[in-house]
Image (cartoon, rainbow, N blue to C red):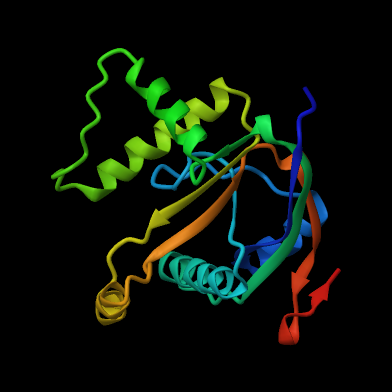
Length: 196
């Protein structure tokens, strides 16, 4: 049976200008944040505006830690012709069911996050489970739609969207687990043209 491949053209990674220059020269290095969506990886959005938001947030976080100024940057990249068997796509029913079966087979399985007060604990648990599943099953890319952390500024927009059965307050995340499958196209310049 022939296996099909997927390509993800023009993904966006938000960072700061200094880090972007280093990435353009040396390539991506997998990050390992504890409170990430999917564990270690290089994170991308498929919407430029989200990547610019991420870049601005990254710069603000670094500024708060170091008191230095940072300029936001967005890297444009693509992933081409990755076999479907190497993609863990949480938007796909079969992949989600396989993940659920895998998690239930773990010793001491009792994953009921409903009613759990500590949202950060739930995020860490999810991150660890996705990381472990992806590594065990040789997944080179994870894709999922995740709820954003609550933000007071968005409360009215979410209420409006809910009233019209529109989904708002979620993010589609592309987490690449193998940096060798990423082709860097350049960084976003003025008017978002790609600058190599």
